[in-house]
Image 1 (tube, rainbow, N blue to C red):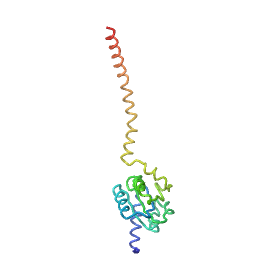
Image 2 (image 1 turned 180 degrees about the vertical axis):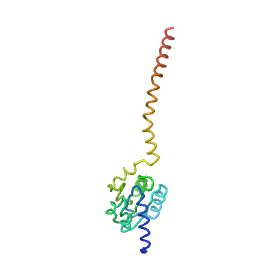
Image 3 (image 1 turned 60 degrees about the vertical axis):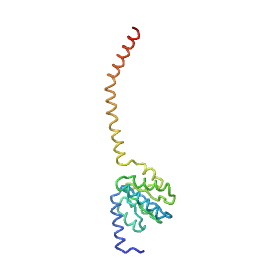
Length: 176
């Protein structure tokens, strides 16, 4: 069924709005995936706050024009789906990579983050980025390490004195 001009404008505006606020984008070829598998992928994407959309390539090119993902336009060839990470930069990559492991018909064609086009094989690097909670936990542990070391250092002279006195006591008891 052909799309009317108004429908096309609506799709372009929706995708452009999402692309304007997204952290990263993945373009993947889905040729040969069944409707059931696509439904599974969409459900997984929704649960991870990933915007997933199958868009005609000409509409996708217009939608990403003027956004950080303009660099992906050359890769828009063939039947593609676009996945945009809304909250977490690695979310779309994790969803697509995990789904592609069990479905070899889903092939990553382009990866973009921060206005830079990356090789399709870089999806593993993007997927390994920590999410917000993990990043905060890593930052907190890095910030806490010097304080913990200082506390141990300040406590060590007292502990050494106690161990020395205990050793002298045990030595006197053994000789008596």
